[in-house]
Length: 472
Image (tube, rainbow, N blue to C red; front, side, top):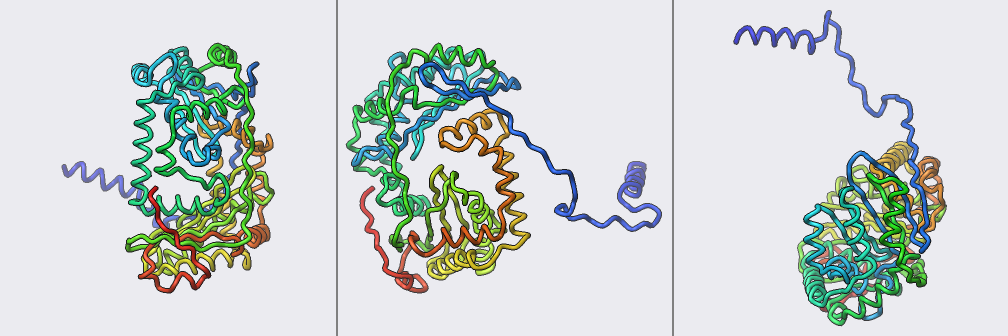
């Protein structure tokens, strides 16, 4: 035992203690280390259009014996019939669970479980998605099921009843989740007057029937309205041949009308919803530039500095750390092709509600008056560019990103020039977009909480719209 301790002491002296009485080297700040810039070139996914109009983006990846398909459909809940909000979402659910002309929903589940395959279908606000992942050896069976789901859904009545019950229960529970309730209500308010603000309710779900799903599927699911990113252990020629085999006979057609984009509001609004809870949730929102807008890059950097950058961002640092007003605070920026939505939020105790809202408004206003520091700008650009690079960690992500450029009608070089344009953003650019998009004019403010405990009346900001809760 002593022998082992002796050798351990020798090792410590040799490898830990400085030799010859020399002082240990000073620790170097990682941010001060110089190194050559990391080069990054985006692999190319090849675009192919099938005779019936389906567009494919192909990228081989033979590392693992899987084949993946990620499809996007030009549709969304923005096309829900008035009074039947929820049709789009339930159509997506039932396409996957409600069976096809060839197989029942339960049979599809069993077959996929047997071959460890995955197929999903969903419809969101402004797009629909369908994905498939199977082992290379099961590609024929996988494509057979996948194509049947997209082309020939039958929407079994029993599965429709179940889907409606599950959605109804989910809507009932929203009021028990303050955060989910607040952000849902904020979406309704900021998009008020636009189809994007129409949300499903218990009443709208109740009146949805099977024929509504059949009509919705017929309107939006046709070859010319679908794009697919195909990746994995499959050669280009084989991918085209197999997809043509299962989708090539699909000949239906249609036309999707474009929904108007939301515009900036002439007047702002302050909205309040009562809920007996010991804290308040505050959300401040404005419309922001879309990805096609030249202001997009500047605004993305600004959002990161203001609140989406986490602990070092201004809203988090000031509202949470310096003032101690909130347990969570920050911002979010959701850019689409032609428009974007920005929001700043705080979750605070009831007695600091108005103070927290004032702090957020002051931070946003200050962004248009004073320049960001060089340190803030460097940090934001570095973080955004790193996040961008890591969004291409798989062939599936790369092909899908390329596909979405066309879906969103963005320039072909959008991804290639993204980092360069981000790096060119200046402090003056940030001030300019802050003044342009973060003014009080047209702002949407939403507060959820109990006004009896507020530090000041919410009306100190202006006229308050009191929302009366109705059954979802």
